[in-house]
Length: 274
Image 1 (tube, rainbow, N blue to C red):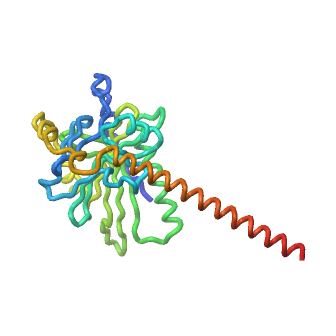
Image 2 (spheres, rainbow, N blue to C red):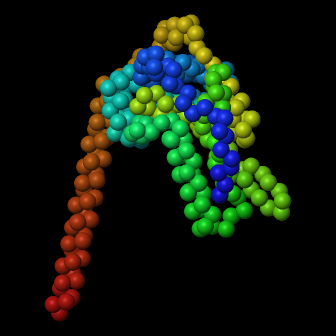
């Protein structure tokens, strides 16, 4: 396990100016015709033009407890995040799935600066890698380092995680991931990239650009998901039924387990009486 050298030149309080100006307004991004747009992050990602598949968590409704019914209902989204959900704002991957990039939003830990949050992430990975190395005799070693990346011309702090295969003096990178972090008031935004190496990760980050008014106008005039798929109320009702069914199933399992336990106890008592 090796945490590498901490890059003290990385600025880890990247959003303070915008926050002080009172510009922050929480919102989720939108995806239209293969293009992701976020007013909150002031970012555009054209997956279609770069031959990538793009998605967000609405496709996981019914499969993922963190999914939201309605991405425009900020009260519901905020409640989910406050309860510990990690919301997927976007995800994109190559058609072969070997390279990917995603944005997630979660609740920021209480009383923690972005600086503290990042170093806590490093320590967690270091502890995890140390446990793995103590348990397994591996030729593949994992490392975590403080780093940064450029997104739409802005340097953002984060960490890089890589697994390196080491044998007879040969070192090959088997896995590379970069996580960049932004803090917006009570929220941590993570831009996560899986790629072949650091340069390849940056090439994916370079797809991000700052949107202009025409981008938002084009998205505004595009067909909305409600016009092409199930309505919000239908999705909400469907999810509600699924949650009720899951609770009923869980209750039945607990009752069955309790009955089995009682039956076993009765058998044991009967044996003791004999």
